[in-house]
Image (cartoon, rainbow over all chains, first blue to last red; front, side):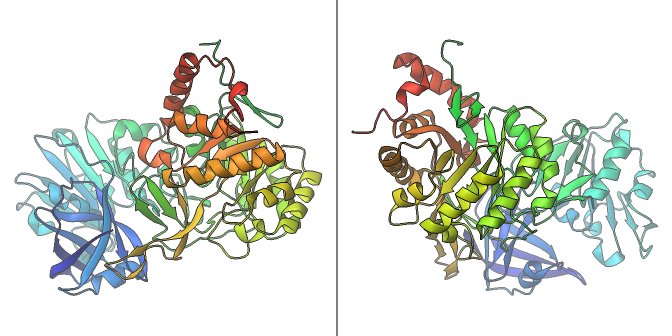
Length: 248
Length: 303
C-alpha cells in the first residue's frame, strides 16, 4: 500500500471534492488505483490530475468515499496501483464524454481544442465544465437544472460525431451502452472506460469481469471493436455477492 | 506431439492436461470460466458456493506481496440456487467444470453437492479449508470426525467424483486425509492462514485481518503435504499452492499429485499461463525422456 499526505483540498461542487497529494509515479489517463480508508473500506478510483501533483476527485456516494472526502490537508491517504489499461493516446480532434464522476477520469485528457459532452443527474454534479474552451462543451442534466434536459443521447444528437478523430467516454455502464449504440454504425474511433463492481483490482476475484475480460486488467478502457463481442455489456453483471443481475 | 500426451485422470474424470483452474480465482462468472477453458485450462473449479447468498467481506480483500497474495474475500457467493446459470455458460465449451461447495454440516454439503450435480457439474470439490470464515472451511476441515461424516454423506448422495480440498492449517494433515479417504481424490492444499499489517496505517490491511496466503511462498508447504499424504495413504491427489511454472507442476507430480490447480499465478502471468505450462511440460518430457505423465506420479517420494 502506498501512502501520501493530502496537501490541498478543493471543493469543486457542493458534493464533489478534489484531494491533492504528491506521488512520484507515472500514471496514464484511464488507469486507476484502489483507495483505502483504513477501518472503513477500499474503492477503485481514477486520478483526476496526473502531473507531479496528483489528485482524486471524489463524490460522496458511500461509506468509503464519505470518509475520504472528510479528510483534511495533512492527513494521510492510502492506495495501491496504478492498475488497468490506459486510454490510447491520440492526435487530432478529440471528444470527451463524461457521465457523473466519470468526468474525473477524463479530466487529464482535456487539452486545448478538446470538445466535451458532460452528462449528469443535476447541475451540481457537472464536473470540469469550465476547463473546456468557450463553446467547446455541452452539458445535459436529467432534471434540466442546466444545459439540455435529458440524458447523454440528447447531447450526442447535437454533435457531428464523425468529425472527431477520437472519442473517449467514461461513466455508468447504462450511459456508456447508449453511447456505444449511438456510435456503433458510425465511422468513429472510440474508447469507453467501464465501471463495474471491483474488489481486488488485480485480476483474481472476478467481480468486475465482462465476457471473461477483467475490467481491472484487460480494461477498464475498451475499444468499440472489443465491446462489439461482449453480450454482457449493457445487459448483465454480477453483484457484490456474485449474483447475476440486469444492468443497471 | 501426439506421442507426448498430457491426458490425466482423476477418479473417473478425464482431463486433456493436468492443469486445472483453482477455486476462488476468476470463477464466479460463467463467461470468465468459459474464457479460461478456451485459453487452455483442462478444467475449472468454481468459486465456493454455499446454501444462501453471502456478500463476503468489505474490501480490502487482498494484500499483494510481490508474487504472493493474501486474501479474505469471505466466501462471497450468490447462493447455490443462483449458480446453475454460470455452470451452464462455463460448460458450453465442453470441458469439465468442478463445482466447489462449502457448508457447516454434512446435510448442507450433500444438498449442495446434489444441486451441483443437477446443474451438470462434472465433479464436486468440498471446501474443507477456507481459512478466514467462522464456522465453515478449515474450522470444519480440522475436525476428522466431521470431515469423515461430510465426505461419507456427499459420496452417498452423488454419482459424480467427489474431491476434498484440505487445509494445511492443522498439525497433522495425514490424519485429516485419512478421515476424507472416501473421497475420489484429495486436493492439497488450500491457503495458509496469515496476517499482514500496514505499518503506516497501523492496522491489518485486510478488513477481516486474517486471510489466506497463496503464491510461491507456500509451494514447499503444499509439496510437503502432498508428499506425506501420498506416502501414507496412496490416495489420488490434486496438488495446489504456489504453482507458476512447469517445474512446480513436475515437483507436485513427483510428490504424488496426478493433476494440479493453479490460481494466484494468473495475477502475474494472465490467462495464457495454462498454454505456456503445457508447452513447457512437453519440452521437459522430451528432454527427460518421459513417455507418460503416469511415470512421474510419486517418482520423487522416498520409500
